[in-house]
Image (cartoon, rainbow, N blue to C red; front, side):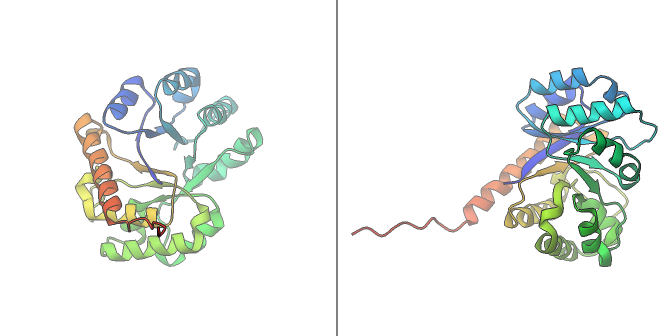
Amino acid sequence: MLKLATKFLPELSAFQQAYDAGFRSAELYLDASVLKCVDDVVRISSDFEMDYALHFPNKPELNETHLRNCCRLAAELNVSAVVIHEPMFRRYAEPLRAIDPKIPLAIENQRVPADSFDAWVHEQGSVTLDMEHIWKFSLHDAPVEELFALVRGVFERASECIRHIHMPGYLPGPTEHRPMYTSREFCMGIFDILADHKFAGLVVSEVDMPFQNYFELRMDTLLFERWLDLRQQSAPPPLHAETS
């Protein structure tokens, strides 16, 4: 079953806030300064019973120590994915894999055209699907049914390539990275598609800093809990063996 996660810089207060709000998974955002103090990140992470993914830094000029520390953090936290943007993948994938051939890099879609989306997923081989990017940049704010159709098709044809999900609560328009609960139809529809295809990775409520507070985070976990309840209620009853 899919796991709901949030995303934050790995600071103690952010871990505690997410945990208190009901999250049991997190994507840790990395930058060069974080990669200088991985001992602290490992120590704090170990204090919380959570599953983790990492988001590789978006800015270049990382040195070998940064890359080694990223690989170490991925290994020690047993992360399910290391999200990475394509420019950073082109620059750093080879040296990262030279350090750790098993590092689970997952390239995030940005502005991939809808008509070549399947081909892009197959070409990359291991991807983070950002649902907001698909709707806003690939489908140009088309009706949500077109988004659902595209996502279903990608899972039907390339589910083995999908490692990680980004899903803030997007609604067509200029505003991005809102909480999931602000776009209920979108998020619950995607939850259903992921569950139908037995996706077991992290689904990240990737929200901007103004929404990084207990109330907004708790509203997202409550949305997920409500979806779980509805999913369970709609499941067919278990078959029982006939008795004589």
